Image 1 (tube, one colour):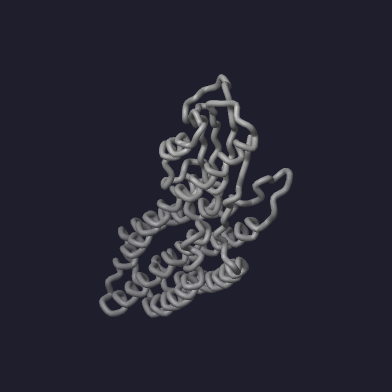
Image 2 (image 1 turned 60 degrees about the vertical axis):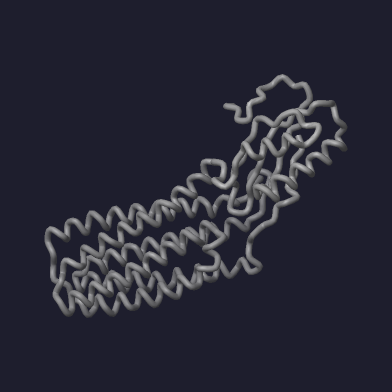
Length: 307
């Protein structure tokens, strides 16, 4: 069996420690906001402020998970952990997306209860604390934005903070409406809106991370196209028993059995393997290739084998 990973072009940043530093700053800021909002929410009687505090607390937990995953992902492989901790960040993204959904459901229940029994809210405190939330979360969002584009774990942390910033904007608007118009129903209405938005944002990330954890073929890759392209290389007879999966954000693996028309030499196979690597890397973004060459072997020749 020939295994090659000549094209393992990692997309990690030149300063990976910046990710960790930015996460630490965001964790500290979010702990401060959470404490302030819990105290403020209890004093003012604002559900939207308390719901924002709950969301912020979930942010603190999710940022800590992201930070630990970021540290683990740098740990080297070993004989009993041959892939190292490369999936730690995917697990973190999954956990964070799942917590977003849970927090959202809790907020919806709270908001429905408050709708049935609207209560007066001390709006000045709500206004000032929501402003604090906007500034602190806005700063954290800017810190994580760059890494969020290329890393699922950082994206999950970024989404938590971004939805928090939007929640604080909504709470501020609610505080102003309560202060000047005494529209106290706005408080649970905003809580409901924040919760629905959390579900909308979290679902996509949950789906993405689940696909990677379940070893599903990435959406951008079409196995039939790969089989046809490899099948055109001489002297390949057919391509079967194909597996394509994503290990983490940087690595996509292809495993396949290839049947040859003739009993070729090992040096000839190496040249063909190089052609296969070039094809799948440049046209399909696969950077780890594992090929089992066969000649006249009696096994299933189906592309996907239920093994």
